[in-house]
Image (cartoon, rainbow, N blue to C red; front, side, top):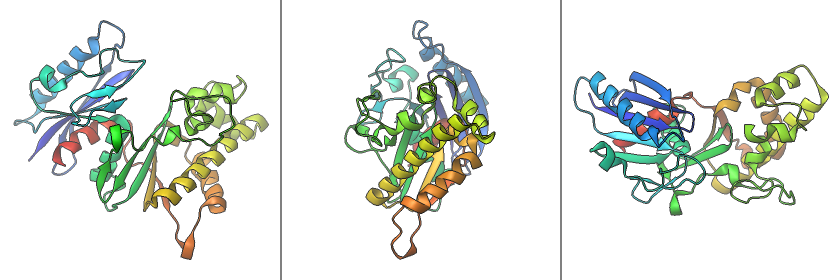
Length: 294
């Protein structure tokens, strides 16, 4: 039995798992507050979680995989770029801190690796994944391998434009981005201040409220156009949608499929499969651990 530890370092919570990399079984889970902004306390919290998970293991572990927001360096040993949050994360050497090998990966890429190794993408070689939450992240699997690209930026699907003439720019200076079109971070602005969260917007949509219906279906239409566009560029076998917004279930996947039926190019009847992610909020930690068996 091969064991690995996976850590998902988020702005709100730190999640850790002890994973049997042979079977994909999660043997233990830990979740604690991140305490971002409190004298970099999150570094010590990660140490404590790793120590606890090691104590839970019946044998030595292969190492630690750590998923975090931002762009990892070329060696996947540290996060090279993460402005605005988790001060001190950029360039931080996790292997030196924990005194053992640590593989550092973008959190959306880690979610894709969980699906590729153990979830919905296990039998696929070419996969696109989008994580729909506060923002929109993503990852690419090409030929069965995670494609990180130059400066590890590949797969950031949220930062493509769906409305180039929009004067509103997202955090990467992209006008009218997909992230701004559907991410939870902008739902208040998109709904003219009426709905504070995507869940509230979807609840009102289900009741037939006109403004909620307009805002929600506009967002889904832009998501569909984006997916069809990326399918034209990448020709994936499968598109996986994860993140908190997929809890909208039929309110998301129903209209999304309707719009894809209109916009997707389907030569000779080819149709790109679109499915819900197998893993939930633990995907980042599971994927980070699974990367140690690459």
